[in-house]
Image 1 (cartoon, rainbow, N blue to C red):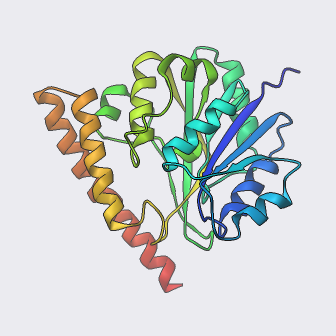
Image 2: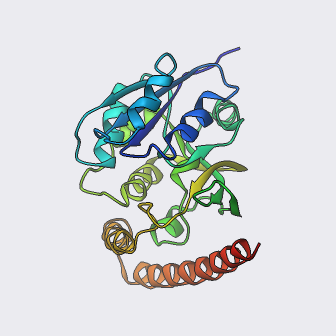
Amino acid sequence: MYNPKVSIITPSFNQGRFIEETILSVLSQDYPNIEYIIIDGASTDNTLEIFKKYYKKIIWKSEPDNGQTQAINKGFKMATGEILAWQNSDDTYLPKTISIIVDFFLNNPNVGMVYGYFNYIDENGDLLFTKKIIDFSYRQFTCGRFHPVQATVFFRRSVLEEVGYLDEDFHYSMDTEFYCRIGKKFIIALIPEVLGTFRIYPQSKTGQKASKRRWRKEELRIRKIYAPGIINKFLIVYYLLRAKIAYYLKYRNKLNNHLEQ
């Protein structure tokens, strides 16, 4: 049976609290041909000690860098797999994720990128709720209706070779801009299964208020590039407001229920 190599990149910086869980979610996959590369930005916590525990099973380097986006690109340049992904250092894959996506790619040779459903988890790893995302539509995506979450995204090497690496001018929405480039040239498909987890906590990049403001600025900059025009401007405002309200209400209710337990 043909088992194409899958290369997973994890950017890391002072994530000793969560990085081992991320590592184990990759190493415990039932798929036999995985290359796991971790690019660390010279962490000063216990991260490097954790890497050393798994030195026979992972490839890692630790050196100063210019942030997450550059670290991911470094990893892509080292990767040798036919299928690529990056998994952040506080998120995880579910046990059979790699087997599921490889099987899908093998049976759908016209698809360039896949993504799936995911679980929101808290800092303790407890489930908050499951997020189900709609089928990909380039126009709806560029106008802000929905967003494939990086923790579940995989793409072919040929896609990266065609569209290029992540844009290092983006520090918060590098994934959005990357998916826009992919969506213009390749088929992006939804796998309707939970493939990963996305961790929400106050200290996370996503959870910080200042980060959210910067993320919104980058998102609007991307919309101006990939969704110009009066109609698209209206759709952008509509989808962003609707998504923000729906997310706030759902997350608030789920979080309150979690805290009351």
